[in-house]
Image (cartoon, rainbow over all chains, first blue to last red; front, side, top):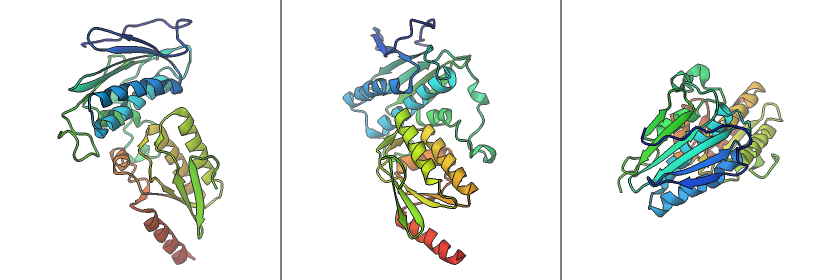
Length: 169
Length: 124
């Protein structure tokens, strides 16, 4: 992997608010508390970078959705909403693509074992669609071996589902 | 009327038309308010509800889960949930997840109202 989020311990070091660092390769890293409301500010910054580079509404929609789903999964299913656990987020926005990494401190999971939410017996289950939506809207979605970290890429040149004209600029 | 400001519900000759008053249903507060407002719609057994999505531009799988809960609650009491006026981008979420098979979806609110009223007359 070109960039991997460092492992950090739990406990008192968990910040009550997101903390942010930048590296020479263009990645911005943030450590978020396990609190769904903490997602907002990070999302705003990512979308502002897309807008600054002229990404269209289509790509903003896709990235926003996948970003939300990845962080919700990390906090709810990974960290099980325990505020003593942290979520490490990294993102890099270039003129060619958007990359997002999200790592939680949970027990991990096997993405290939998530029940298919589209089959009849699972259609009425209220959960279990986040990973599918991330895969549908991003061009690459790869998990670490233990499933605690996801790396997603959306290329500017590629179209977005539901946007017939997207990716043609 | 449903509780909260995120949904505004009115009665159309026995059919409840509920309009979503939000551009996005993303964060915890919004999803919670949305879920509570939807559950309030199921307070009346057998209620037939048309949920109008006009103006809604973003939602996540959490909000889809709340819709499924309402669908089940209404169906259990002999009611029904229909969806209408869904933005094409949002509709794509229903298509990807195949929830377009679970929900009865109309292009426009008026079509849904006409269909439910006609069915109500036929069943009377």
